[in-house]
Length: 118
Image: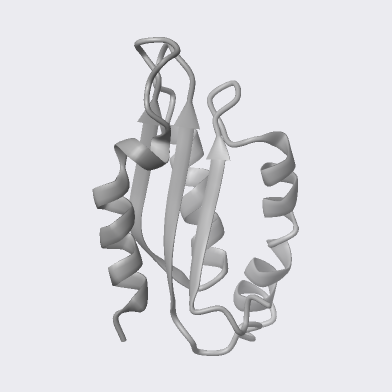
């Protein structure tokens, strides 16, 4: 499926300063791609370059995005996807805030246009 994809979005809430454990578990499976490229000198996904984005959400409090951004960007890199956008959303003001999609609609539309452009 990755070989056929033109665009890839990595999205996750942030727990304890990083993407979810489930996503990290999935990311570890991409060791195959790294090993293929760096040890076997074979490109497992062909020459196609995809477009990608990272979307992260954290609840109120500190904004620990660095590790999560690194994980998301590294996952895109392993899928041969160029990171076009990193979207971050935090709910510092508590409940009753618009959803991440509502707050970032302009960015989402820009990303959709980037994905749809040749």
